[in-house]
Length: 219
Image 1 (cartoon, rainbow, N blue to C red):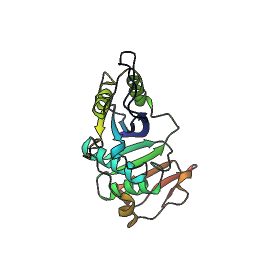
Image 2: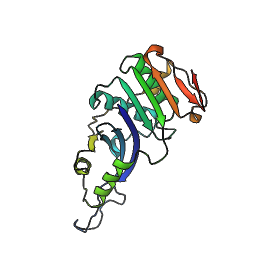
Image 3: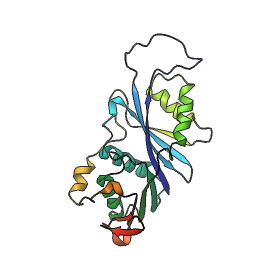
């Protein structure tokens, strides 16, 4: 399976379109909703994790790993070989903790082989363009309406909404402390931001292969 990871933010309700009623905004600051997308290029379909302010735990490694882990468990296709593409966001995607997590998946036999590559900015944003286009012409007054808008932003079902939590407390996608858990078993790869391709395989589980210029090294 070929997966792409990307994120964006929306200033959620209210959003006024040409057909929406006009009235003063009650709140001084509109509610914000972050979106973390995992696109399965082969279908294609993108699962969009809608992160309301009430369930926002930040944009660190624990959050990203938890969402990807949830995706594999609940939205995955049962694939044994995975190819992941991501942007070069150091705090979310390009860090030792996410590399540790992918190595852990192979060790636990959740995947047989994984490759992890970083792409140029904007490469994985086309599905978000559908959401932005729909957002401009819809009146959104709640997180649930935003989820329905995401689901209907594509006529062929490219976008799918996944609520992380609701405004009143319930959490559907829990965030775990992967950094502390994985830190007990792995060591950091020095100068990780200079590398753009990583590989993990079942025959050498626990080993991270990374590409340096034209050479392949291991750690």
